[in-house]
Length: 400
Image (cartoon, rainbow, N blue to C red; front, side, top):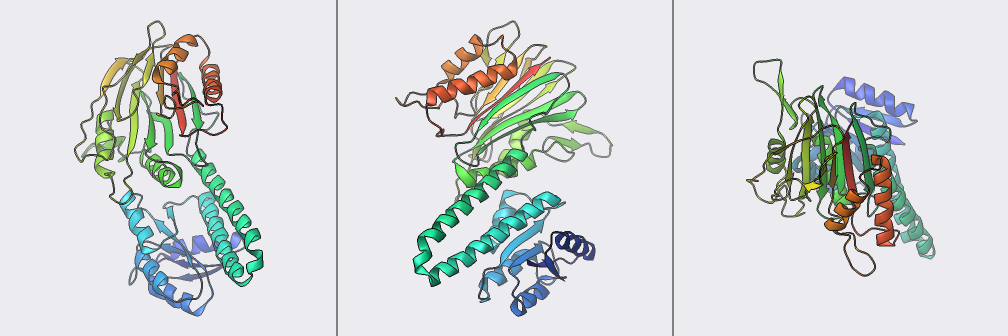
């Protein structure tokens, strides 16, 4: 396939060119948007990889000009950008971009997105052929639906790649989870990670709605919640080589400030964010409109944590609080989405929070992985259907 690269950085053009040629693509490179537009007007190229920031004509303006031009074909546009805020991505899509790759880009991710673009362009050609061959309409539609399912499966695989790997370990902890999307892709996502040698962090969030729009926001949030310096999770101290780890309520407040509800999509999300101080055996967490986490001490009775608050994005000034408790050897904490207590059976009865608590009490002596397998089986038996009406997600953490 012939691909046009538009980037004012010669090194990036050379790097991308070698990479694409290694995948058997033919490459044409230009240094700005104006040159890219001229190349498209004089050539039959249908896939463009463009930088966002360029002189003379930037990436979004190039997108607008391509969409306004009468080129006689569809041009698939992938924007390379260091921006990952929701409003920036919306701005790029409104300008006409089809997809984004965040800098610094991952080679495998870029290849997957190019292949997705190729499939979309193939579908465009298929649609043109169907208009010319009405007798093939049913067969072509079936092929299109199959292709869409494959693309959704690819999207689901990409989303699963953002979750902890099946063999993921954190020293001093046992970890297990349930992740059952109601469709190919989910609005639920979770993660846990080492913040430093003394703290681990974890979260579980649930974007309102279902399907691709919710999954897109959940993927954006998972990238945003990466435990690196100058992220919402940890930040540098001014005039010092040191850093501070953000307390949970601060993390939620920053998310609320950055992800206010958009009037067009009305997307908001609920979440729990917490961390464990390993040395002090302290648990701190805050939640935003999310089901309260469940704390099961080794020797005590089960209890719900958190006093509740509004979901992220509902009001500009979210009132979030950090709750502190002990978390000792043998203690367990369970974070879950509302798809579990609201999982309905054939008689329209919910699984309920009470039933969930009862099962965790009843099976508390089981190893953690065994307990979650039994809980997932119990939910499937309760539902008695291959599909769930909402995403079911639960993250369990146990201190050794």
